[in-house]
Image (cartoon, rainbow, N blue to C red; front, side, top):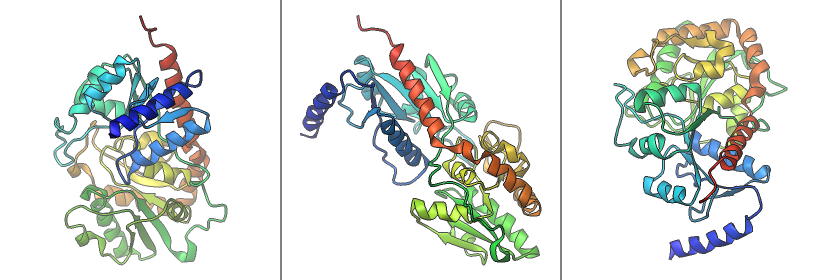
Length: 354
């Protein structure tokens, strides 16, 4: 019954879309939180603001399908048989963060699209391309592009009334879905050492912290944890913070860092993944990492992170000024325009039906 309703709606959509901009299929996000959901929502809104037709009805005869990471291969094959251009949007792959070992089961559908079914692969960063190539070899797609994520600059932007070190307290902040210990523990170790020397800072952690034994690390006098927040609350906290601290292994294009950068915050983290692509203007604040594509937990050096945090506090005016110069580069409009160009070019160049 559900499929019948979808088919009827698909027929209506297909008829009403004739002669207009190509119809784009983008699936509804299944994750309640997280970067992919946030950016895909911005992408859909951006397309619609430009008068582009977007559907989440998989029965519609879409001209292009933008698939975040993976989809059932048999469904993709059906789209291809109808002449739909398959655009796979990839961040990275599933692997074990302790050992760095590739997970073939969780990456099964992703690898099939990447090697066999995608007409175009869009990577979130140059590092994303390197990571996918490292684990899955070269893509079989005829075309590919690198398009960095962006964010809503009407919400995430510097505060004109920002006061550095308000009340004499340095305000550090981290945001995200803290599902791995590597996202919290190195920062706690660094800040524990800093706390021994000075108590003039607080660290706001915004987002769920769910890794095993997390409570052992989350009860510190300098930690203020907010498990959930609205987008408005998140933006407000970023705007009123002095620096953003980020610990993540091999990030492909983290929205948390993009939102912080858009607010003009200096970002302190590890030189892993795409961090240098995003924050190269403050490269000195990225703790050194081994020269490898894939880093593992044992590579994260809390002392190196502490050195960068101290440097940011000591020369905060300089690093803040660098971030402010580049904050407008994190906008979503540039990303949406790049995606739209890829779709237009892909649809216009597809072979005519025989």
